[in-house]
Image (tube, rainbow, N blue to C red; front, side, top):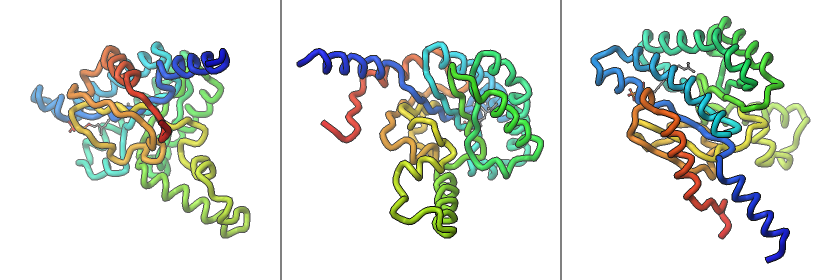
Length: 246
Ligand code: FPP
């Protein structure tokens, strides 16, 4: 083996040590509250605290992109007061997000934001704009997000471009589709963590997870700690990712 390939291998190994993009499905808030005889919204409040703590832990570990699934396109089916409590927590977070901005963290949102209140949308746009040059880590919040919905949105945009003559069908490539997703410019997710014992993707980053590794744990999201994140990264390191090669 020549020196070049040794250094390339080492670089790859180094690259593998921390996943570049981690996705987190914040599951188990309701059960966490129920176990304590508390209303579900209490679980979401604790879940929001965990979200803040784990964002900081991710930065400390050296993760470059972290996406949290905060509200799915299916979550509107929940009782109105639970939906309101999640939206209120989200708004509270947006008001406090300056802390993250001070830490040089870029914030982005993925999902169909047009369904959210104009006030929320305004705050979201402002946070994205104010943090757009920050580069220590990118925090991505999936709000009113659904993977299939995201693909429909991209296909509609592409169809419009074909219809008005900007694109021809042969121009449609994986890269082009990728560039029309909400995650435009964000690398594919490497590791998806789902706590609370469920082992499903639930419409989260379905295009972007084509080669992702999965880490499942029975811990409920409000109890999830930095140690659990480190365990997930350690498990990821033990996997041998081949991307379809040998
Ligand atoms: C899933 O647990 C959790 C949600 C649908 C909401 C997650 C929202 C937050 C953690 C807070 C708001 C977000 C931010 C960014 C501040 P579940 O309710 O399905 O739990 P269960 O399966 O035990 O019922």
